Amino acid sequence: MALAPGESSETFIREVDENLRRSQAEDFFKRWGAAIIAGVVLLLLASAAFLWWREHQADVAQKNSEELSDIIGDIGAGQTKDVPQRLDAIAEDGNSSYRALAILTKAALALQTGNRAAAIEEYRKVRQDSGLPEQYRNVALVRLTALEFDSLKPEEVISRLQELAKPGNPWFGSAGEMTAMAMLKQNRRAEAGRMFGSIAGDKQVPQSLRSRAVQIAGTLGVDATAQLPMAQQQ
Image (tube, rainbow, N blue to C red; front, top):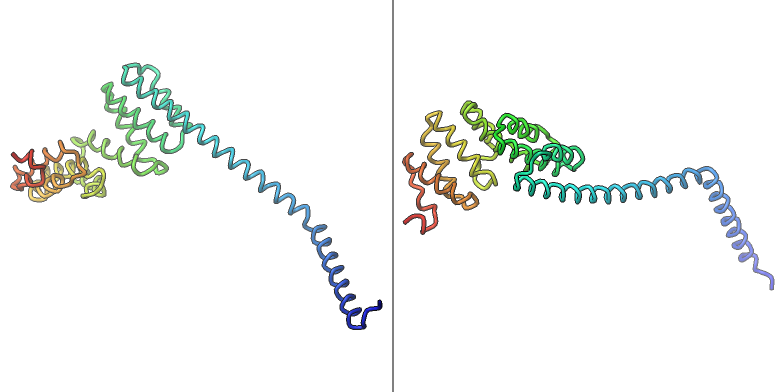
């Protein structure tokens, strides 16, 4: 059965349109096909590399975690002969967190063996390394300032610890106490007393430090006994 003129025209146009699309598609792939395939291959390679890297990082982290645990055990047992070298290996190969932990452990070991200068050097490494997580750099700052306290000017101590010596900060107890002691060196007794009072009232601060803060605050005319648990007030 013959098609109506209108139907024949529509069929012809549709066929021409399909042929045109096919031709355009062929031209497109002739021109860009190789680039598209190369892009897909690169994407697959990048995805595979990322998965390998992530798995490799997890393996390295697990290895460093186990090694650091073993090192701490050896330090506790007094077997420290090769510990510094093992810690250096973790610091070189580990991620930023394990690098910081390794250096901080090395600093603590130096203190344990009476090498104060070496400990200061290691704490400085952590503090000055902007690539390390802030919490570890803050640990190093507090420990470093404690070791250097007697050789620092009071204003240096206060400036160093300014951001940490605030209620609610995890390091408020230690940083606040050193700040208050530096204030006493400057004869700023009233401010030091208020700082000790704040330390006594911060429940996040270790109880032993809060008790000491109450005693010192009392000598400065600040009664902070109400900040302690009832049992310690009696």
